[in-house]
Image 1 (cartoon, one colour):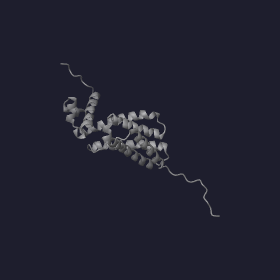
Image 2 (cartoon, helix red, strand yellow):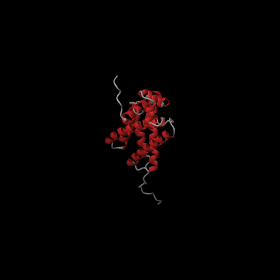
Image 3 (cartoon, rainbow, N blue to C red):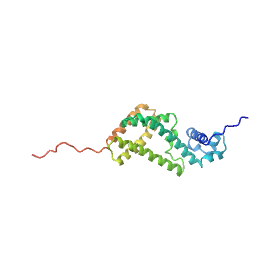
Image 4 (cartoon, rainbow, N blue to C red):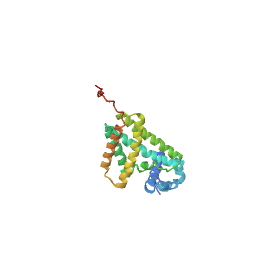
Length: 206
């Protein structure tokens, strides 16, 4: 009998996260248990607990890995984008590409109530980080007050989720959805800029 190769700690973590992610994607969040993850990788349940304290700890690790991968791909893709419209196109396209590959099915689903306080805390921190990123993007390209830029970031984020849901339900052409979404986002944010005072002379009574 050939002895099974012993995995390093990092490799074991990745194996456990792969198994957990597959369970979520194929069977939903309710299917994720420490026991089922152990079964998938053919180890004792105690091995899973050696790396993750509980289900919520494991779930946060799954979310964080997916988000970290998305952030790396996005930052690389944004290098060649200059205008606001190009950057929004890049963000939307990168996100939808990842969903098409099932890379971010988990990330897209993470806003749902799927865990305890630890998971909720992670989700809140992630949302804040996303909104900060978009707010900075808006203020870099538009003369918009920070509070209004944050409002735009909230609408941008919610709109992207809605775009994904709409495309999944209707089968609408993806490129058209992207183009329409970018046009609407750019137009809406431009409308938030403070209006310039009129330079036209004020008519006087004669």
